Amino acid sequence: MDAGKPPPAKTTTPADELKEFVYRVSHDLRSPISTIIGYAELLAADHADKLDDEGRRYLNAVRAAAQQLNAMLEDLVLYSRVGRAPDAPGLGDLGALIERARQWALERVGPKDADWKLPSEWPRVYGVQSELQMLFGLLLINALQHNPKPKPRVEVTWHEEPGRIVCAVRDDGPGIDRQH
Image 1 (cartoon, rainbow, N blue to C red):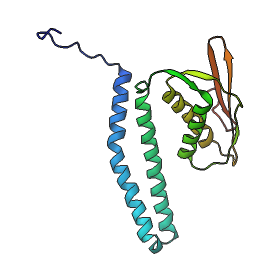
Image 2 (tube, rainbow, N blue to C red):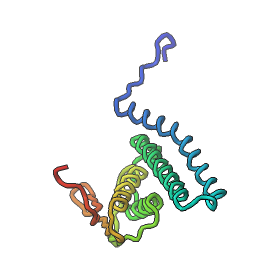
Image 3 (cartoon, helix red, strand yellow):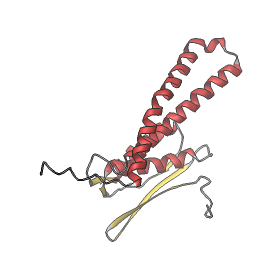
Image 4 (cartoon, rainbow, N blue to C red):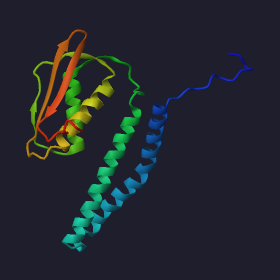
């Protein structure tokens, strides 16, 4: 390296800048949200018996909203990491990947009695496994979260085409109108 020349400038794309911004903002907002959740939990634990029904309903609404905001911030952090995964692409078992994604989705959405239709056999797929797991996890969260039915049906399918595996996640929720 020539000591007289500066190192080449690092080029960043607008998408890189957006992801960095999202990461920083979501990271900075986590502390006050954690404080709100913490104080709401303390208030519930120490003073819930002194509140009337309306006060407990308000406290529960604050806790639920803060937890939802915290989950949204976690999702933003995950989004900001897409494309920057520490693991290299490789072959992985799609069935194991889907099961991890399913468990992650259920943790995020909460207990939900769903009718899962999953293949009995799974292929091995090539890709960045952590990003594939996140992708499927977000699709499964969407299938569960936006379905008003008491027992939503969620189906994951795959088939092989020349040179690739094609996967689909389907559910029996309201969906999005084709025009939108």
